Image 1 (tube, rainbow, N blue to C red):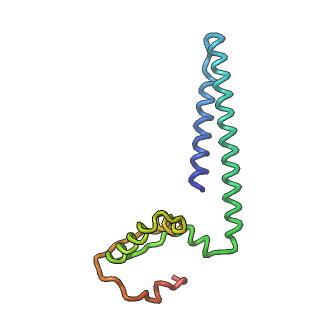
Image 2: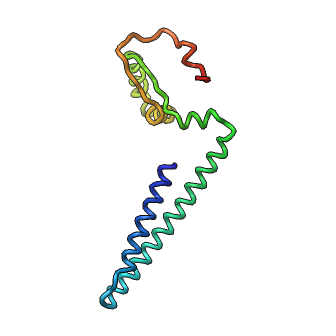
Image 3: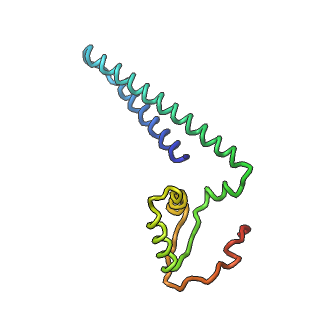
Length: 140
């Protein structure tokens, strides 16, 4: 969400620069003056739309932050990229499972989470028979 806000601000700034360039240009005749006015009006409308979009996105982001303020785990989970180390066999099973159920929307959130929030490392080793307790420790 923050990246979208930054890109909108960059777009607004570039449009304002273009608008200033057009407004400082000296028109030679009445048609060029009319074109200049219409171009400035077009820039003003686009800037107003982008500012409205920026306000909506920032309001939505602040509402999401307010809702998650009481849940530090969710804030941390959204900010951190998890590192998953899998064996070749485990990775193969995961890929096979996701490919078999790719048309089911119930797994869409898990697939999206794996693609956006996880950094997967595949190692040439045997699968671990159990999950060590240290991997589940939240205080690390």
